[in-house]
Image (cartoon, rainbow, N blue to C red; front, side, top):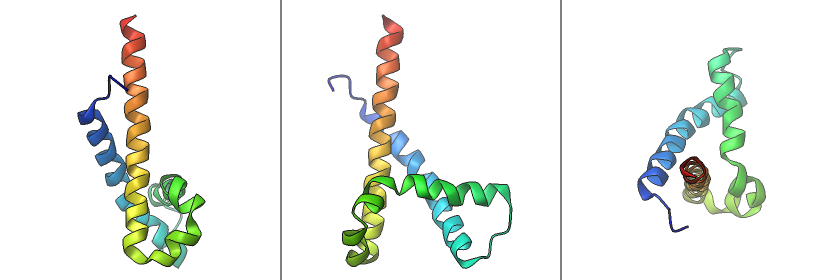
Length: 99
């Protein structure tokens, strides 16, 4: 953790948040039956199932009772989790490449 890059963490978290926005819209459209077999929107709808993983999958009973603030907060925690994993992978490969 001594080589933790805050800028890489924030950038990767921002990328996951930017991916989350169209995936929420596509998932909502898929639930309502308004998106067709457009590969672009179907891909984003399936991506939402990945981006909601840690909090919404494991703690759904708590998240569902908390309302929209808890729901979007959980999604933000997920994006930060994926940003952290991405930063650690980038840091690992930078160190491995230097050796």
